Image (cartoon, rainbow, N blue to C red):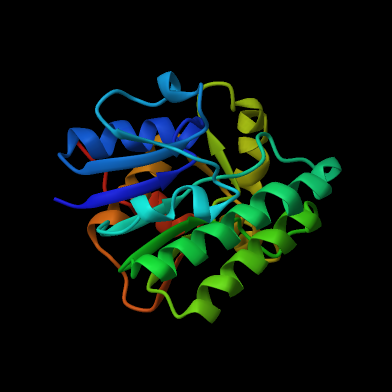
Length: 218
């Protein structure tokens, strides 16, 4: 079983992923700000630190098999460009530095589907994060979801009829599939698959790949 270091473990995807990894008997170390320890699922090792500053947690990355980076601004919108650069970009820079220093064998990074006609700042920051991974020479899996449906994140369900139509029109089929919706369960399954089947060099998982990930059972 793997020892996995996780940033963003108290978030929407992070809590679900850690719970599933623990059920599959992996060992988890999760970095969290002091005072937020109780937001992590029970059973993981708590690392008090700041995900924006690798110096606060880098010593705990050593000895881990995988590093899963899930930090990001909650509920991204076009108005949050400054936050994307001060949080998303700074945190992936810190993660790459810590993973490189520790000799991590596999980094898992949640990016975003692109190109797209909206969310240009968000896509630009996530693309910069991807380039940092390539530049560092890390083995990595980069996942590119567009929107992850789940509790509190269901408003795009009303778009499903539009997606259905777009996937059947040749002009819009590719974009509809690339920018499609994935469920929280599909996202967690894809992340577990990334942890348990490490990539050599860099592997990209687009929306269709995330949807095809095998369901995981703890």
